[in-house]
Image (cartoon, rainbow, N blue to C red):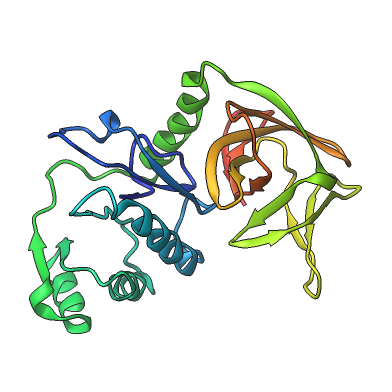
Length: 251
């Protein structure tokens, strides 16, 4: 299972695959299970990620004996505590720490030290923030180029449910300034940026069945580019591509 890092996993999502033979490159792995998070950074989405990991584990454990979770590299501020919470909630058998000795000792102090081991980081794998941003943009673009059955799908807002940060909303509208607003009973409306260019996950009941890109939005309808055939939920995200510049954005 990979959080953010799997080359075959759609950005904003967590992907898991059953590997039956030796591999040397994750780009050769076909992802079998998805959970949509809606953000390219784990910051502020830690609880959502842990719940998503637990849901995928429940599915994939029936198909394999060993599950390796390739986590994100978030360790600053509350990043370590978030990893510790994940390890405890999924009841991991072992935690392999790739990094400095101080980081290893930090994890050992918070978990059963006998389950925490040190691993050497692969050499020459350090990427700058710009490199990572370019790679994610390439992933976005490659996904749509590789989908030979991509088509335009029109969805009426009144007949579609929307999911954002784990909450399901039955009401959505585009305000007079073009911003997307979500409404749920007894809660304040959620305001997101203009939906054009937003990357979305497409769901049927509780399963992610595909991904898409919002091309156009009116007060009553969304036009989405996707290869998905049928879905009744749209999982919104904080990222996409600006139509005018072609540059990836985040909220």
